[in-house]
Image (cartoon, rainbow, N blue to C red; front, top):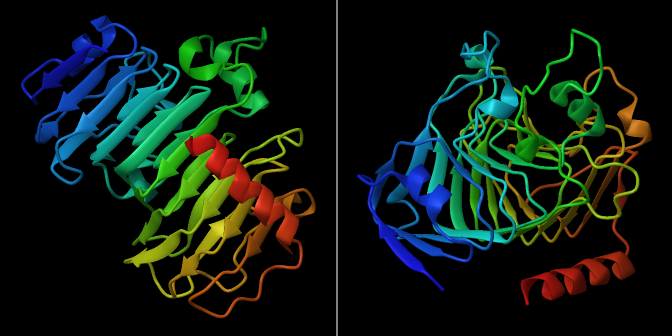
Length: 317
């Protein structure tokens, strides 16, 4: 396997574009003030220090784009992964913009691949910190210009980032993910294992950790296992664990600890929708505070919990 060591003075995007597949890249400490896309397959990107090796950028949704529109949520990423079987570890990825109530969404990491893993990684932003593809089908149509309607964008998002056939399996292990509103969102089969989900302050007063968009055909969505939902400045009883970004969004929470900022009802149906009729939100062995979950959620069965534990073991081999 090829190995490369880089410092913040190096052109990280150029190296990523020109290295062969299955390269290991070591990043020395420092701030890499760059917006990057990881297109190669099988890359391992390893930081020298989790808190001292930082890839940072500051795009935001309402920022004017050179094409005449705004950046929109999905062009604000600091790091975008489109290569398969990429693994990152021991570093921080951040979108340094704050105040999403005025600048809009600020994505730190966008994963648009069928297989991805992050270990000992900090993801820092506010609204929409982590996007886990695939996109909902209606957004694929809207953003790729697949209709003649002039109101739709033509090529608004590059096809490698937008249109991904099949499902995506992503693993986040021992990660710290910071945010305020919908700070983990998308339609991947994604496992958050021993992670800290840290809700920071937001002037709007109400926060949401996860906003899943899984289609009905998806049998497993977001799985939070042995995680801690940590107050990082959010108000007491001000944050929901999840709300469905699209109908049938799926979240399962197993053996997690909740700080006092999490609302006792746990889940929200998303504004004035009827998604409480279709959302698949469930829980088991939640600790830290008294809960009174909404009636449309349900408790995970022992058989399902065992299946998920076995699935996790299988994926980590």
